Image (cartoon, rainbow, N blue to C red; front, top):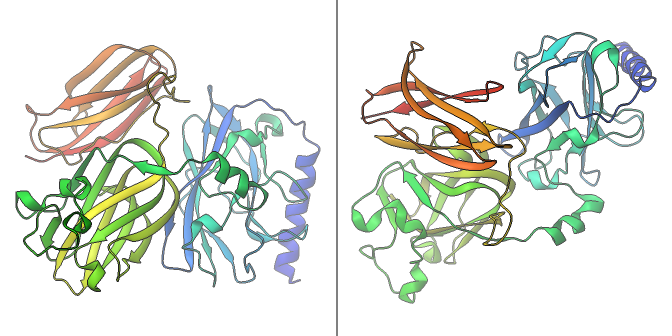
Length: 432
């Protein structure tokens, strides 16, 4: 073991020993999440780690985080890196960042020095990159989850170095594997998710709009007898072209099926799959559609999102972006008639859709309890230009319309305030 590694290991064990003798409390005053994963080719994947207060602000003095990974993979080539400058904390994760195997189990680990941060909002701990010679694009196989057992485990300390660790306060976007795989498969009901709207980069006439992607008309509808003039498709000349599918609310997306024009005859389309709208998207994966059949299936790996954006960057055999149908499959989660309404666990406001917009757009206000909600729109000078909402809303999810008919083109800020205790802002763009 090199001198540098010995030094790091000694610091790590010293910090672990200090944490172990802290008093453990089950009080949930924080939430720590692993989210926003991005894929860069087959050998690199990154994700963001956030921490936020649950209720009142709290003092964060140090953190040691360990995440287990599917041990059946070849982990010998893996490297974990922290993206310098990505943390919003004063006490950034710089005591140790790497992969440890102290207990015979490989874990992704990052540790801070002892410091002081006041957590009063959702705050980025940092962005981390996992690199290796295995196919990291198959994120559903990584099985990354928070670990709270063994010599190296996840431990969070608050004021006066009190151990405030609560396993239930930690969330990971990556699928669980191993002993939980069968249990998850039994509880997940994969079904076709309805697409309620869409927005596209361009269209070529009324017969070839993006709405045709979910109209139920496919090449099979014609019994395989179709031509370039057949309607029921989204067809645009040239590349790249993009389409955003609106699922109505956040769903857990597993798979997208694509029926491309001429795919049964050997034509393929190069696609990039993103979570989110085109203006605010995160790459999930890149794949080329299959040839020799009407449909091509693309696994996304349990992505939670309301919007899915597909960018078609090119084609082998066609100079047009020419797609018959797109179908989305996953865990719908929509309440059926007679079921209890889904109540959010926290307050919040969604990104407006569509964005950019003209002249109106919609947002969702999430209410965990009944309270007074105020929604205002400001220009970039900080002047309030629109009062959208000032009313008591019940617990649940409410869709609010923002009418920008009397506003000029430009960038605006919209702000949600609830009972003077919660506030959140987002940007939107009006283009006339």
